Every structure is written in structure tokens, then in C-alpha cells.
Length: 290
Image (tube, rainbow, N blue to C red):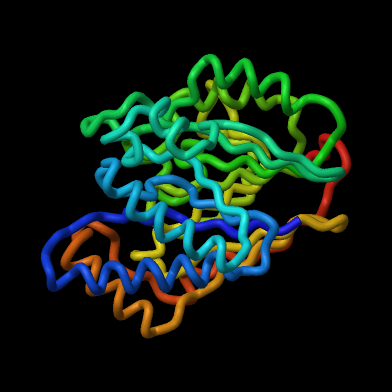
């Protein structure tokens, strides 16, 4: 099973004539390349939109829908904190026809889409997994040991880059860890939110005596406008393979123009070397100490 993952898109409607064309060209190009990736699933890791307004969602969705039909790809997303600023979660579920959290599984793998967003707020962009979802998770992750990929917007604290900063991780990570306690080390948690590519093969955090991060692999996909990349994960009988796809210089130049003129708050570009998230995690049977 192969899954293509993209970090925060931050699609922003800006009616200035000088940036409309650049915006549309860049998003069409990045989404076309992403959806053309040979993968079973294509997932955006939240903050698809910048202001979360219905017009932003509808414009982006029209573009994705056209390209998805052409590419015959399976596109889905997890909610980001920006995505619910203009619509409620329930409204987005009805409109997109996608649940805010759900699971798909095969013989040896399990994919879990999580909703790590709070109620819409421009003052608090931190993460949280609600009680209803925690109860659901306790039931769906039990049973036969499988390689599990967890997909969320916010990272676990003290794992990937910036996850120790204020409002840059899941606030109730201890509760989420307890709900997922049956998962073994063959678990990969994938997130966006912090705009920077980062990869961590975690060990228990001895600095934090209150709780320990699970000994999983943590993959943070940076925002394409900042990093010029997306990621591809492949689950095989031998383990999990992670690769980075680096966009070309022409697309990077287009993205720089957008960063300055539309999303000026975005991080600076990283180099291709800094962007590399390549990794192979061998399959482990049971709860093997690392």
C-alpha cells in the first residue's frame, strides 16, 4: 500500500489581478503532480485553505475534482485549524461528504484519519482530540497487529520540529496516547501544521516524567509553499519506506512569488538537503523494545 502525503496548502483567495494567475497556476501544478503520484491514497494533512471560507473551499475543491478525475486518484484530507474558520466541522462533513475521522484497512495495514482541531478560533490554533473520537479510537485500533499510519494535522508534543512551541501540537496528547495504547512500534504518525519537514524515530522522552511519547516514527510534512516538497509512504511486508518528492526550480520560483504576495507569514524555503525525509523502518512483530 502506498500513500502520498501533502502538508499545509493554505489556498487563499486574493482578488488582486497581479497574483490571481500565479496562484491558480501554482496550485494547479502542485496538485496535478501530487495527484499523478502512483499511490493508493492521496491525503492532504490539513489547512487546505487559509481562511476556511466557503468560496476558498469551493474553488480549491473544483480544482481538485477536475484533476482527480483526470488522474483517477483517491483524494482525502484531515482538517486543519484554518479549515474551520468559515464553516463548522459539521457543515464541512456534509459539504465534502467525508467524515472528520475514519479508518480504512487492508490485510497488514491500517490507515486512521484523525481530527486534531479544536472549535474554530483565530486565537488558539493548538490541537485537541475530542472525547467522542477518543472512545472511537479505543475500539478501532484493537485486534490483529498491523502497521498503522495515523494521519492528523497537529504533531505530538516534543517530537517533530516546532512541536514543543506554544499551540504547535496536540494539547491532550496523553489522553490520545492512552486511547492508542494497543498500537505497537510499527506505527507512523503523520502531520502537518508546523510548515517544516521533520522526521523523528522516537524514544521515550526522559525529560517529561508525566508521560512518554510512544516509540513510533513521526513524519511531519512541511507546507509545499515553504518546502517545495511532498512525501510518499509505502507499506510492504518488510516495513515502511518513506521518500520525499522535491519540486522543480520553476515551481519553487512560482511559490516564492506567492509566499511574498499572498502568504507572507510562511517560513522561508529550505534546501533540498534539509527537505529530505527518506527513511526505511523495518517491520517489527509485537511490542519490541527499541
